Each structure stands twice: as C-alpha cells, then as structure tokens.
Length: 306
Image (cartoon, rainbow, N blue to C red; front, side, top):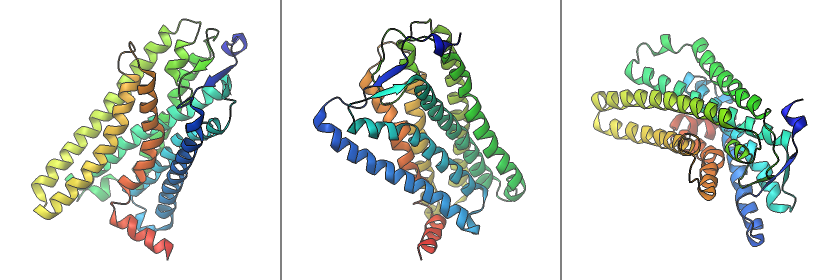
C-alpha cells in the first residue's frame, strides 16, 4: 500500500498568518492587491518582451523566464491564502498539499538556476563584449532556460516521492501559510530522518552552488565596471547591479534560513515571515527591480501603451 492509502490524516488545517478575526478582511485586501500587482507586473513584463523585437535578446529572454517563474511561485500560495482569509474552513487535502509544495519548490529552484544564467549573461556582456554575440547565441540561451526549468521541475520530485512514504497521524494542523515540507515532517508519525537529510543535502548544495556562482560572476562584472567605465557610467551601472544583488540576497537569505539552518529552536512566526518573502514579496519586487530601472523596457512599455 502507498503512503497516501495508509494515511490516517487525509486533510490538514492551514492556520495562515493570523487567527484574529478582525484582521482577516484587511489582510485579504492587502494580499489581493499584492497578488494583482504581482500578476500584472510579471505578465506585463513577459508581454512587453514578447511584443518588442528589440528585446528579443538573451538578457530579456532570461528576464521573461524569471517573471514566469515568479508568477508560478506566487500562484502556489496566494490563492489558498486569500480563500482562507474569507473562510472559516481552512482545510486542504493531502494531495493538494503535496501539489502546493511541488509548485513552490519547482518555481523556487528554477529561479535559482535562472539567476545563475542571468549572471553568466551579464558577465560575458560586460567582461567580453566583443565575444558576446558569439558566446550567447540564441541556441545557448534557449538551452540555459530549458535546463533551468528542467532541473527546477524534476528535482522536487525526489521530495514528493519521499513524502508519499510518510503517514500522518499526530496532528493535522500546519501553523503556516502553505504546506511547508518541514512542518509536514514534524506532524508525521513515520521516521522522517531520511527525508530531512535528503532535503538538507540538496538544499545546501543547490543554494551554495548557485549563490556562489552568482556572487563570483557579479564580482567580476563589478570589477570590470570599476576598471573600464567613466565615473558617471560607473555609478549608474553600480547602482543597477546593487539592485540585482539586493533581489538575489533577499531570495537566498530567506531560503537559507528556512532550509539550511539547524532545525532546533525554530520560531513559527519567523518562518511565516521568511515564507512571505520568498513566495509573495520577492515575486512582487522583481518586476520593479529588473525592469523599471531599465530604459529599454520602459521605452518598449511606453510604445506598447501608445
């Protein structure tokens, strides 16, 4: 028999952000507006890039792919969160719970590898501008995007398979915004040491590898900017790269504290704040960080509006 067929608990209760009734409607309105801005911002960026032939370059194809991953990440959590704000029925079936985790995990890992591809693209463009058309040709760009999505969507299947071996009988209450995999481990009546070890090893490796690759690439980029560009262009390029690194730091900082730090003494309210950042706040900020500071995207947007 499979793990699901043996499970005593078939539904879970998501407690959400707060259990105070007077805050439910205000929070619904806030997160509904955030969700709307996130969807419009990311889908609008994709539409602008697709519409304008001048933006059919590797950098903007990576941005469009990142925007899609951000929308995918936000949509894994926000709809259920909004429903729970207006309903007293906070139940989520086990199958939907695991599906929610898979959607989030696939989009988050895809985003990590897309950020690596973007950092490599900027490294070649700034450090080897004469070789850029040769190195970053369209086929390589397509392959980098495809590999990022393939790894992102295939890797979480390992954890999904390991979830199916668990049974749940201790409690059905999840004190979180969504079906967080670490909390599923705590309410399982099956030994989860293998699950936790596999998650820790893979999370540490993926986050360390992708983050260090991004940092090395951007360090080379910043060195090239400081060495080659005049003072005015240097400060502009430096501020743009700092904005990119801010987005990267927010994503990796919250993921690190959630999945790589030791598990003892975890604070459920801190975990909710981390989850808010990597599932809702970062997808909201990325279109503004990567696009509204970009003259080419703004020009294409004005042209599309006209």
